[in-house]
Image (tube, rainbow, N blue to C red):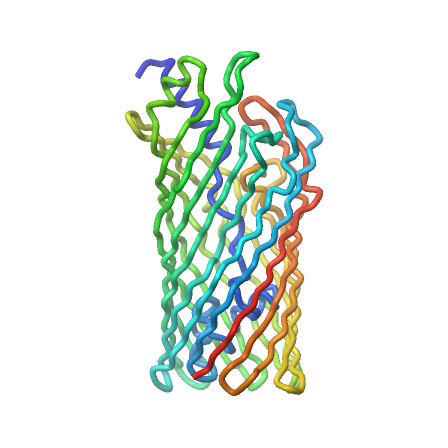
Length: 419
């Protein structure tokens, strides 16, 4: 390979490295049930009520009332409107870059005996996407960035004694990524080309351990640890509209792309306290190792190949949340919660493909038992996702601004059946 060809290849890799999307930001505390959606995720770590404990903390399965199955659907409705101050390449602000999506979920738990319980869960633990359109002011960094993640999680739990239960599970994680970026071509009359990475996918796995400890009749503690999960995505790479020589000759040699990164480890601890027979207080904190996510490798292959590494300079995050649950006559209950998550990235490092910022959640849910076996619940969460300030230069074009509107609404509906 000539020095000139190497330089062009390095340039292409830089375009990708400055624009690649690898996750939807932080792990989602909303997994599709009102126990998570209706408490801002706070109740998950001390969940001894619903079958979704198989995912949120498997140790809680030992304390469930009978065998259970929960099925439902969660609707995500994002509104992400960018407002630019500087755009040297011109273009539009992209309108609403978010698109609604519906996600089904299913959880089941069975007690094998007085000590052992097993469970199975299907959920979406993280994911997201933005679609700014082809004429976006930051199109040389991102036009479309969409990530879908599905987790299949079997788990088991053992009740050590009347106070302590332990649980363990493994999540088999399927990740799919699509990424489109405009490619600036030299010359005053040259139109943009486009880089498209479509259908990049991989299966990975993530182990998790949980514990619950019933300190008193009113006070229960919970803790869960999730390990790192390595992801090695591979899929199609396509260059469109590249007309300038020799750039089109170089890009024609590549038809595959690979992206390697790590979903971070995390630790979550919390408690729930029975304030009265009909009132419960819950709180939780967590730490997530998002600095590990920053180390990323990108490869291009086809008739030629190259591999580069870079660091997105992400930071670890922390979370704090509180929630209340209130029972009413007629086997009805409501919950409400609030939580805060710090930003994994500073304003100077934030990019258009992954404009994650601090997050503030407000949640509520309503549930009713229709019989001894059957109950239903409805829940919702409003997530304010910060201003998402950006000041980036991609392919020698600068864009600067922030999101004038940047929020996400979760709506969930579930049915719970006890055997």
